[in-house]
Length: 339
Ligand SMILES: [Zn+2]
Image 1 (cartoon, rainbow, N blue to C red):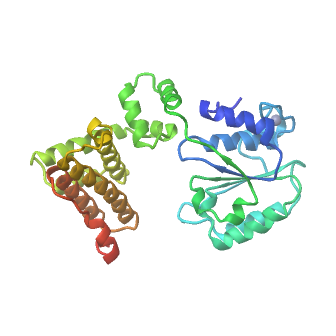
Image 2 (cartoon, protein in one colour):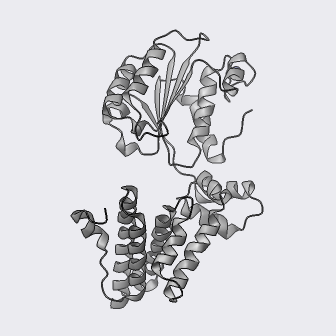
Image 3 (cartoon, rainbow, N blue to C red):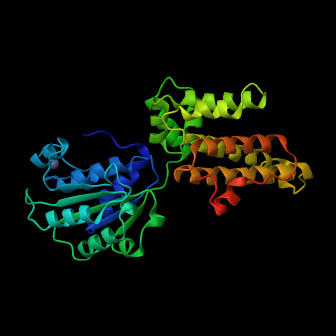
């Protein structure tokens, strides 16, 4: 057996074996990032190529399985965005289609995994569409996406759609505890929250020692509030991280907890929130929006230092102010500032 599937993928895998496969030639697998859809695809690919597959999957013994295990099966094609490109190009798709028109090397299925199908540009979609409409016999397309909203209807309607929900929290926690037996439970929960409930992302986050950054983020804000550090000093520390864009997630989740602490309170439930707290709630919600907009700036290659410093100052403002807070990000977004 190759590596095991995580527990939240075992039911989908059983469904795949019992009812879903092989009912069609093209499947669209929609899953959140970081839950291991890539592993599921690896299982499905190997089963399709295997010469004696069973109800449980590939046999692991035959020549096809050995070829696939060593990454050398000639009838398997993996298409993804090239490292330096934002999109999957029409040339990539045409190259693939050309190969599919040749006969299969091993006399069985040709299996294609297109990873991040939403990254096809318009002409690449069109090139693929023809092949999906008139597939050659014994061809299996597995298309994966973390962002199904970006896919044209024409593609969706030609595939069998399978949705993979994110794992429930107790499953995710249990899996992480098994992977990291010495890790504290609160840290595991925080890692999951910061990674949007995606266990494999949370694991990678912990293994990359991101907790140290998380702690630095918190202590930076404390020092800022206490006047022990300036905004630019704090931001300079964050910018040294391997992936400073995480700052936005930290701020966002902070605002989510802040909002929750108010909305879960009895006064809120009874519709009797004091005026001051109502303003505070509004401000936290506005700040939540600001973090999302700030992240948009960041991703658009705005002046990164300026974006973070502005967000940091807005955070301070929300902390200190009892009057209505208005983020500068939205109006600046319209005026095209901060660019
Ligand atoms: Zn086999």
